[in-house]
Image (cartoon, rainbow, N blue to C red; front, top):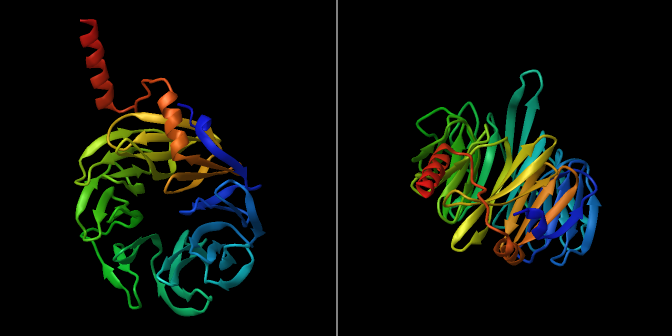
Length: 358
């Protein structure tokens, strides 16, 4: 099915979209490469638009504040009006920010052009009023920050690798039995996993769940199992125990997420590069079978909450899908043989065709 036929709304940010977020009340937020931040309510009405200094890379939202990372700064906006409440300059680029109870944890990093690498990072703890409680500097860059019921964890690059428990300094360092840097992570449904450059997917206690064919670039915890995608575009759906259910190869995946269910099975959304544009695919997470796809501007960010899924594109479009509408369109769509290009699926289809012709 053509996924664009089931869109609930399409809005324009007016510049390339770098980050999107949606909340439980269906409010949609989008941030741009040039620092614009926009907010629409659950019916698609524009509530406010503001301009910050630089690219928006992350949102942290509570009942009162919309906190964004904008270039070198943390910027706190009033959730109702978009008016700036406070800002704080970090050391280097502001990479990500999350809420930890009533405090904000932000990560910054300094990139050295001569060394072609990140030479220093820092974790900042701020109050909701913008006061810095503490800052802890690191020799590694935290590439992924996971928020769980047990705490906040940061996956590290070299030299230490492993991950940190982000409580108060000094942080507890957990080192896996390899020296491979952590590249990505995912936390959902009571589970938290990290992916590494050597292809391994590990739980927080260091247990290896699977070893993929290349460096793990994206990782998504599903209702059942997880989906790991390598830097070569190879996506693999696995059970909680790491057993492969399906795989699909293609162009580089720019981002992925879990959103909505098909019966009792969650759907996984994969955004791939496709020339100068992007290809968005929706798959069942338990077996082979692409449900829908769409050609869009290249997708740089996606997010979901409850019954809404939001995608932000390089051409400035913010595209929103509603679960009920998508299900109705899927039920109306004719069945196809739109299966993934993996060897086992192709072999099985060939055997079935041979049996039918016998």
